Length: 311
Image (cartoon, rainbow, N blue to C red; front, top):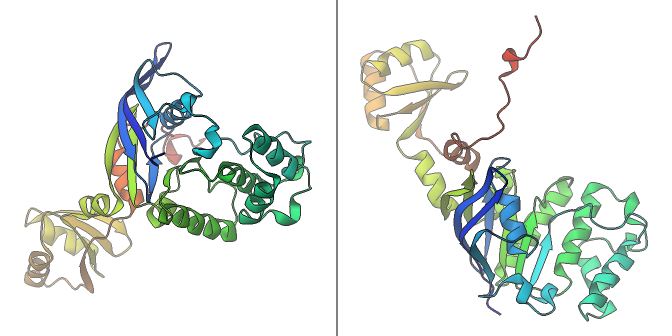
């Protein structure tokens, strides 16, 4: 089966609330595709529909051209991690995987193999109720790999992992994609998606806000912006304002300038005798690009710290 997820025009309402409003995107083989958006953006609903756990009001979600519910032995086509707390706490890790393997006609040898891949070989006979969140995440990944699927859908796989676990997960996801699998990873950790994903789908209020390579998103977020470092930021702000540029303070002694090329910024500062130590094109992070894209799509926004402070 072709390793592709195709989401086309998904719509879903829960009473008066619109969860999905015509969402469309494709997850292709050979790439890790990041799936990002604010709380309430529709990510979980979309993944549940992809995995046949919910039905859309309209639209389709196909895996290799077929709906999940039509797949025979689905774990051999699609592996999923949606809830790391799903295993029965009283059940041993190996027994949990043996039960899943038996349901799909998979041998016990595959259970031991995926436990080793997930780094859980030494705790295979421990009850999952005593597992840390990071260990439960690894167990969920082992379960997703049981059928050696060509498609993986992972929801927040970095949650609860220690630094060693994060490095392991990053390398693991990269290797899965390199072997030709289609990997969809939902995460709020933009720094991790920037390191591992080649493509990102950003959603908000049930719609796709961006569907592009990470490289293209960063280039768009960086365009026309210059980082300026100076020991005289107030004088620099005045000199730049006189040229029509827009400048904001991003850190002590550091300005984020837009509307002028680096060469024109240098000329303006030199003409006003403003000292500076650096004028470089801004290199945006995926987090910056994400924040710009979702600025109008955040459903649950906290008050600024001073707004909630007691007097």
